[in-house]
Length: 88
Image 1 (cartoon, rainbow, N blue to C red):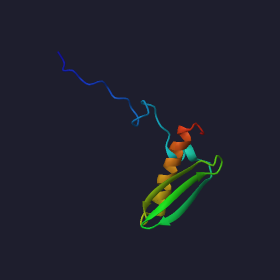
Image 2: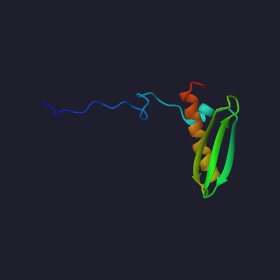
Image 3: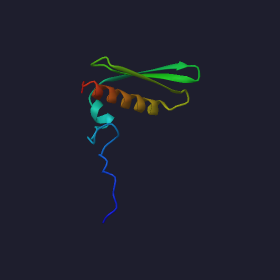
Image 4: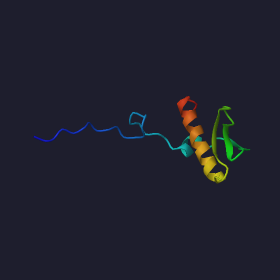
């Protein structure tokens, strides 16, 4: 008799129920995204705004972070928000 195995886990990221989730660059392709960087002490406050909908997300990160990395993270957060709200 084979040993009991736990049930197979769904494929895909946690919280997706096994559905494939599009990459942020696929969700945002062709959309105008505005980025704002505001230094606050040893941190930088990064905002990403979707020009078409006005949806804005923010994050805080160490001031020494590379701008390209901070933009990528903010864009991923914006893509998640647009998907969550059904705007894409």
